[in-house]
Length: 351
Image (cartoon, rainbow, N blue to C red; front, side):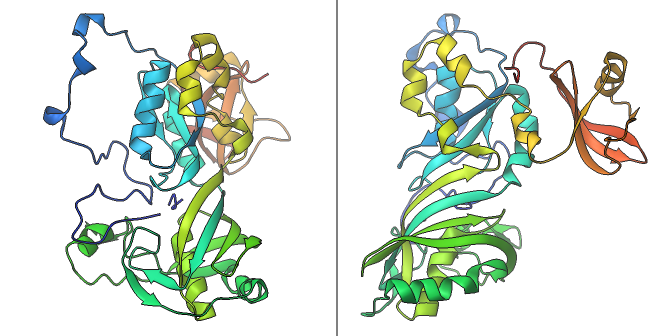
C-alpha cells in the first residue's frame, strides 16, 4: 500500500526507514550482515536444510511487524529456501501481505501491479508531517466534519486523479529517498503523480474519526488521501489505523497468520500454499501448450500460438499438463518467454 503503504517518526528520531512503497528486491533496513547473530546459537551442522518450495502464502500481517520480518518468519516456518513479498505493508498497518516462495518470486511484479483494497481510519483535527499517527502535528483545527460532509467530498478523490505523495515516502528525489531527506531536515517538495482510485466509501463515523474503505491502483498513498480529505474539509486529518484487505487476486479469506504457520505441521502448511500461477490468472491470458512447445519455451525459444482463442498481443502465460512453464510477450503470433519456471513438484497444483 503504498500503504503498500502509517509512517515515519519525527526527523530527529532514530528509526528504521519507513516501509510505505515497493522497494528493490533484497533491500533491507536491519543490521549489516556482519552484525547480525548467526544461526541463533545452533551449530551449522544442526540446521535443517532449506527446502525448494514454490507458491504463495497470503499472510495476515499484524500491527508492529515489518514486512521484512514477516517474510523471514514465513520462510523460517516453512523452512523455505527463497522468499519475498509483493508490496510492502508498514509496521503500523495490518492485513494482506502476499509472500512469494521459490519460483513464485518471478511473478511478484504482476501482483504488485494489481488492484488493492484498504480499510482506514482518519482522525480529524490534526495534520502531521508523516500523515499518520506517528508524526509531529503541523496543523490543527477545532472543526469536525459530519458524515454527510465527508461523503460529499469523497467523489473529488475518485477516478484518475493527481496525488502528491507524503513527505515521508520512498519516492526518489535526485537519487535520494524522500524519507531520508525529510529526516535530515531538508524541505521535501514532491510533485503530484497520476493515480487511480476506484472507490471510497464511509463505513463508520464519529465526530473524531471516520472509517473509510478504499479500492485503488498501484502507487496510491492512503495517507495522502487522509491528508487531502482533511484539507478539503478544512479540519485537517491523518491516518490513525490502516488495514489492507486485498492485493491483486489475494483476499482476506485466503490469509493466515504467522502464529498459525508456526503451529501447523508440514502437511497443513503445504495446504496453505497457493499455486505460483495464482498471481497471473487475473493479470494475463492463459495458453496451454504441448510438451514439445513447453521444451522450447524452457530453452528460451518462442513458440507459435495457434487456435481461435490464442492471444495476439500483450502478455500471456503458458502451462503444460497444468504445470506453469513460462510467461512472456505475444509478438506476431508467437509467445516469447521472458520468465521460465522450474517447478518440478515444488509447488501446489490447481485443481
